[in-house]
Length: 475
Image (cartoon, rainbow, N blue to C red):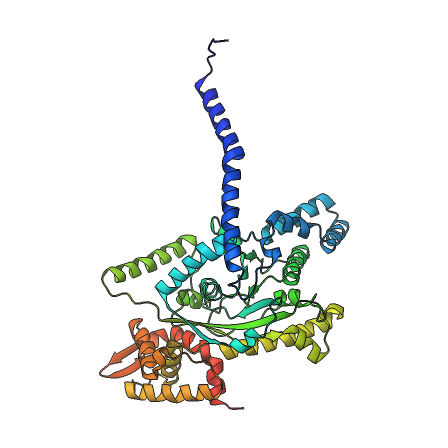
């Protein structure tokens, strides 16, 4: 029994690898899982009394349980059987596709990652790049929202930075669940996005089965009280103006709403604006049909060049933050009150009537969203310089026009952020940003819009173009 056995070196290495995998599976993974879960439970206990909107059990349910629940949903299974009969595809193949869709959509929310790591990173990045400001907040309206209501933040989409900015500013109120596009389905971003509670949406999917699975998940989350954030424009604004709304997700949320139920469904308009949007030139480039489309390599080189210039400016002491980034939270819209006032019952409405009602709701939400978009220094000065039509202005003339426009906007109820509550300083800050970026020239004491940068100047003016129209036309 004390003899020795000789084995090839490769066989010995394979045995060691298998032993290491077994130890990892039996010892390390359970310990790591216990440690992570302990951290998550600690975070949830700390947040229990701090959050204004509690985290519903649905959001912290194990992901596999939610996937199984979505997969076995009666409506989804009936649709899979119908698809199999109509297409001739085997039921097993259709169900596999349903399961793939469910795994793609359902997030894996991690409270520790969201509130400890994600919040810290979002806060650090946002404050490093911008002077972040929480502008107008309808505190009485938000205070009147019932605690068990399902909240939906309805936001304009200026930049991909919106996700970071709003999540950071809303973290003391609720944990948001975003609907994100396929741009985020790359490793390792995909796992991070899912852990932050977001769910993926194929914006242009023509598969009715996929749309049904997505619809059932959104309905499940809404009925369970998950706080969500949607961009009704469906994508980034390319020219700075608000885009026409795409109301698919909102339709999914309201079609099962019961005004007599326990939970109210409350939409909160959230207006976002920046003195500088990181992707501004890239977005404008998409409007030019003659512009050569950049591939992944081109986009990477552009990004590397942008980062390199900023690092060089930082090292030489010539770097400035990108001005102000401001978020306004408007007056909540209660679906219970909205449906009661109009005699609408979404659950029992025929599809054409429901679509018409959702269109009406969408218009009202977009009107409220327009009202709360912040007026920032760059947008204000850009609009004045653009309206000058190439005519040089003195600093005094610019300030006089900007002051007059500010008063007009205030009379029309616009939400204007004035840094340091000093209007002269606000105008100077906006002008400095435009001069630094060579959108405005300063020559012999006169200011003139750069004729080669009219499109970019208009991009920032367009952020408040709807408010300027109201200010100039009282009707």
